[in-house]
Image (tube, rainbow, N blue to C red; front, top):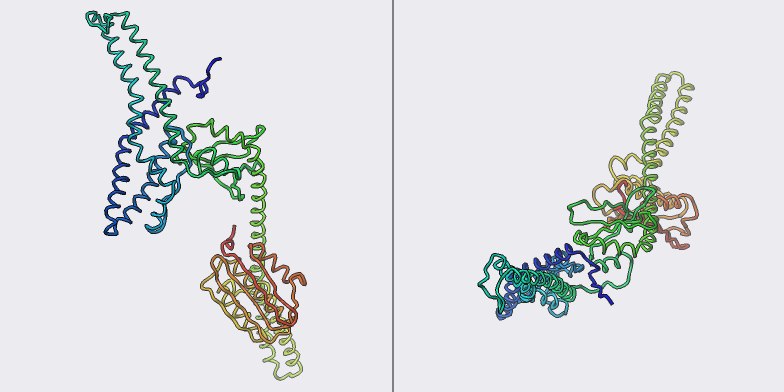
Length: 513
C-alpha cells in the first residue's frame, strides 16, 4: 500500500516555503529567547530577592503583565510562521499589582511562562536538527566540486576523489538536502504542537456560529457580516450596517456562499489569509448555519429600520406641529391682535354714542375670548416656550397655569435632545390635564430627573385613581410617542389612592436617526 503524507501532496515550492518559515522562527528564537530569559527569569529572581523590602512584589506583578504581552507576540509569530491558528492569549491582568500576582496561582500563566522560557533552548535544539543535514549537504557539494575539478590525488575514505565519486557525492548531497527539508517540516510540526499546547487559551466549546468559527480558526476577534441582497449592504448580528475591512488594515474577509448566492462575509485576522483553504473550509461547513443567522440579522435590521421610521414619523409630526404653531402665532394671532386694537380705537371714538360703543365693546370681548382660545390651541399644538427656552421653562408655564397646587421637582441642567424634550413635555401636559379633568385632586407633583442614559418623568396626584392607559386616546398616543423613542410609560392608579404617571425616556436615542 502506498503511504500518503498528511501534507496533502504539497509541491516542492510549498515545502521550501514551510522550511523557510520554520528556519526563520528558529532564528528569531535566538534573540527572542535571550530577551525572554533575561526579562522574565531575571525579573522574577530579582523580584523574589527584593520581596524583603516589599518593592519585589510590584516587580513580580510587572513581570507577570509583561509575560502576557510577550506571549501575545509569540502567538502571532507562531500563527504567521508555523500556521498554529492560535486564538489570542488572555489579556494582562488589570488593576493594581495584587490582581497581577493572582495569575501566578493558575496553570495558564505557567504554561505561557514555560513557552517563553523554553524558546531559547528549543531554538538551539531545532537549529541543530535542521542544520546538520544542511551542513552535511554543503560539505558533500564542496567535495564534489573538488572531484569535478580534477583533484584525483585526494581520497575520500578508500576511494579516490574523481568525477565518478563526485557524482555520487552530489546524489548524497541532494539526499541530505531532502532530509533537511523533511527535518524542517518535522521540527515545524513539533514546534506548532508545542505552541498549541502551551499558548492555547481555554476552548470556547459549542456555541453560536461566530464562537464556533472563532475557535476553529483560532481567531477570537472573528466577526460575521451578513449580506442583505435587497439593500446590498452588510450588517452585523444586531442589524446595524457594517463596512468590510480595507486592505492594509490588519483585517481580512472571506466571502461565504450557499448554492451560488452570497450570504455573508467572515471578517478575520489578516494572518489567517495565508491559509485561505482553512477559512473557506470552515465557511463552507457553516454556510447553512450562517444563512440562518443572516435571516435573523435581516429581521433585526428591519426592526431597526422600523424604529428609525417611527422616530422620523414622530419628529416629522413635531416639526409640523411646531410649524403650525408658528403660523398661528405669526399669522392669524397677529391679525386678531391687530383687529382687537382697531376695535379699541373705534370704541374710543364712539364715546358719544353709547349704544354703538357697547356693541363694539361686546365685539372686542368676543374677539379677546377667541384670541385666548387660539393661543390655548397654539400652545396645545406645540408650545413656543419649549422650542425657544427648553423643557424647564415650559414645565413651569404648565405648573403656573394649573388650577390646583402643583409641586415641581426638576433635577436636570441644560437642554435635552428635541425629541426627548417634546416627549417629556407632553407627558407632563397630559398628566396635569388628566389630573384637572378626571382626578378630582387637590394637589399634584411633577418630577423630571436626569439619569444616566435616560430622563425620568412622573406626574402624581392625590385624586380618586382608576386611570388606565387603554381608557382613552391621550395616554395611548403618549405611549406610542414614547415607544418610538424606545421609552416606557407606566400608570399606577389604584382606586381611591391617587394616580402616578411615570415615563422613562432614553436620551441615547433622542437624536435624529
